Amino acid sequence: MAKAKEKHQCCEEVRMDTTWPRYRQCSRAGSIERDGKWYCKAHDPVAIREKSEAKAAAWHAERDAERKQAENVIRLELATKAILATCQQLLDWQEANLVESDSLSNLLRDLRMSVYEFEQASK
Ligand SMILES: [Zn+2]
Image (cartoon, rainbow, N blue to C red; front, side):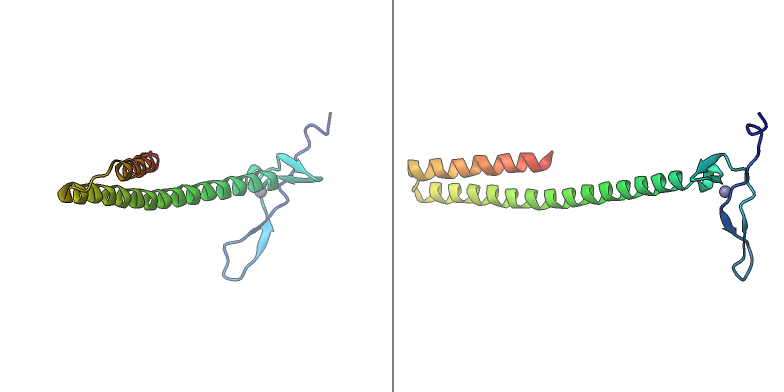
């Protein structure tokens, strides 16, 4: 019964606001016990680690999103160039009256792939 009312002080050392680094024990009440030592909520090593891991995960997710966006810009650019090249080829053939059905189906197949790639990268 006496143990339940026992008060603990956070064991963490905190730097004092002095010119030369000096430390004192954290004045807050220890509410969390880790390996026999008491910590306040701000100095709980598990909470500190979880917070830092969450921060790192968020940082990585942000970098991944940026990389994906940069890759999409390149994909869009390549697909746009391919579509324009195909259109130019069609116009050249039409101008020279050189449209053969085999060449035309190959070109249209390439065009379909480029348009698909463009649509995928636009999502
Ligand atoms: Zn503390």
